Amino acid sequence: MQAISDLPMLHDIDADYTPQCVKLARIIRSKIESGDLGHLAPLPAASLADEYCVSVGVARFALAMLAANRYVTRNGAFSPYHVSWQAD
Image (cartoon, rainbow, N blue to C red):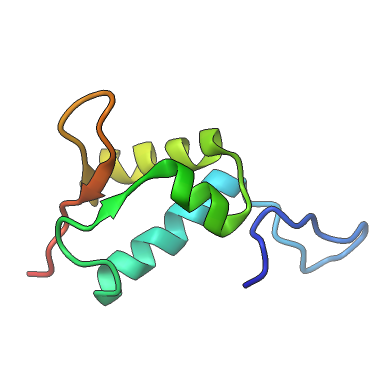
């Protein structure tokens, strides 16, 4: 898998300058909606950071974005996020 942190080439008109946290949130959301990540699946930020070659801070921000949109939740400030979204 190509790391989402790879930078586009200079002057590339098709380059994607979307922030890393947004890219990661979209990837995770897609996996949740497709069923690849099932209900209550744990989503530790450190594991996501390693898998997608981003910082833990980027992974945490992506998870916070998903939490704001009710895809994931966590039980406490020091607990990992887990999938809370279910298909209708």
